[in-house]
Every structure is written in C-alpha cells, then in structure tokens.
Length: 264
Image 1 (cartoon, helix red, strand yellow):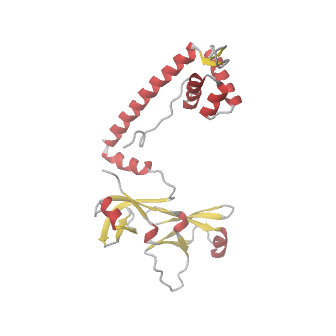
Image 2 (cartoon, rainbow, N blue to C red):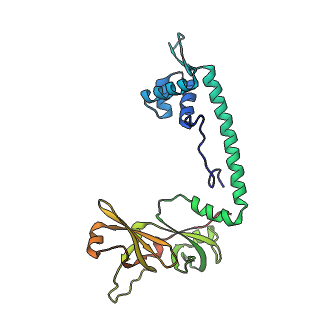
Image 3 (cartoon, rainbow, N blue to C red):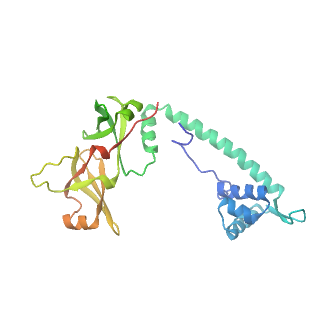
C-alpha cells in the first residue's frame, strides 16, 4: 500500500513554513533567481518576495543575498541561514515520512480499523460508495453478474466483464465496494402500476435536497441508514414536487455499478 494512504499529515516549521516555502527556497538555490524560482514554485514574483521577507523577519536573519558579477550577471543565492533551514527541512521530511509509515503499519495491524480506514481512503468522483459483501456471483462467457449485500440488507447488482471478474478474483464472501455516479440514478416516486427493467431499485425516504443553479442533489436514506445520492435536474425536482420526508426509490442499472475490492 502506498505511503500515506491511511495516515497523512502536513509538516510545517514555526507554524507557517511549509512545503511550498521550502520549494521556493530550493528553487532559488538551484536557479539563482527569485523571478525564475517563483515561477518554478508556483508563486508570483511579489508573492515570493513577501514570503521570503516575512520568513527573514521571523528568523531575524537574511535568507537571500545578492550575487554580483559573473558571466551571467547578478542574481540571488541562499545565505548560510537559509541553507541550514533547507537542510533541516529535508531531514524532518525524511523523519516525518518514516513516522507516517510506522503509524500506517500499526493501523494495518488493527483488524477492527484497517478495513474501515482503507474503505474511507478511496478517492473517487463517484458520489455513491457502498460497502458490503459479495453474496452471489454468476460467471458468463462475456459478462458476470455480481450481487453485493449491504449491512442494512439491501442488495446491489453489478454487471462486469468476466475478464475483470477473474482478474479481480471476485468470489462469494469477499468484501467489496459498489460505486455509482449520482447522474446514473433515477428517482421514482410513483410506479403507477408499472415494473421497471432496471436491476437495482432501492426504496427509502428523501432526507436531503440541495438545489443548485441547474441541478439538485437529492439524498434518499434507506432502511439501515445508507444514503443514495442522485443528481436530478431542477425541472424534474419541481415537476415531481420532491421534498424532504417524501418516499422515493433510487433506480439504476447493473451496468452503472462499478465494483472495487481490496488488493491482496
């Protein structure tokens, strides 16, 4: 597992000298020019100067000195104080990374926490992420049907390629996460006697409605507490008179569900 997946922390010196400041300092030392160093570190020239001046005032010692003459003309270079700060930062970064790695290894040895934190550490644009267990698996020649049962008892069906199912080593009893984009979910408030072909139909109660300029995010709380979020046009919200407390069913196709499992 990559370092920092479960444990991360920002390192600062004196409460304000962070990685960007030291990237600027290092760039000055490498290129000998505050103008070019500012561009390298992502600062404006004025912003770089203000940061360096503020740090120098706090340190009560200059960090940059002018270099005169030479084939390329004048420039800027780091003072002994700046070089000492930069070296201390590099050593602290090394120690800090080692500390985070040690803490992550400790967490991974805590059975009750490791799985929870690994699930929470996943970063994806899919708004809906549901943890559960694979309870059914039907391998076909081209596609495979996967059923993930949530802690609340609801089932989410996903259709994946058989190649992917074999590559991921999907099988019954394996913990998995179902991911669904909010835009792939349709809300139904009245089936009017019709039956839909979509495999996934999760009934619940609208618990959140956040209206934006064009679309709204609608949260449907399922029995057991899980929340399905749908992205719905404002016109649809008005047409259906959607409101908090209203019963609704979140409907989405099995092909719209992505499946994630932990790597060995």
